[in-house]
Length: 123
Image (cartoon, rainbow, N blue to C red; front, side, top):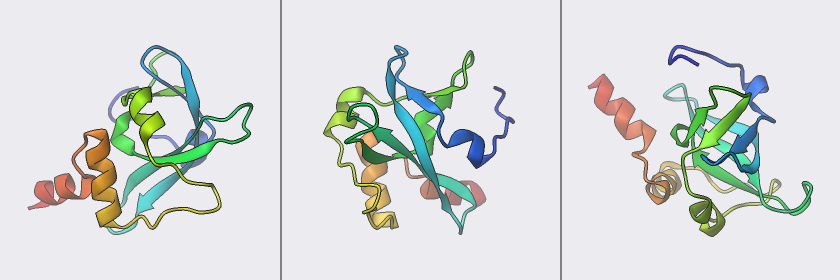
């Protein structure tokens, strides 16, 4: 996909996510939108469990994912070890996704928070 490609949220939700070795990690369950800045804040990935049972959900920076060039999948640019050690949540008990929480999440995965980057571009 080119950098100008666009996708609807409904076409992303349910899409499989793999690691760089092509191993299945889970699928997108949801996308979280920053209404102030008009960007995707986080992708919600279901991971773990067996046959969909016992999966935990994880919020990850949208920038941690890249579309696969050959398949309708996304590749996560974060090690599976980091994902295994991350704090997940139950689909019925989401964390409070404020900027303090988000800054810690972005730091955990090695990304600069999108709001810092976007505000710097606007200034």
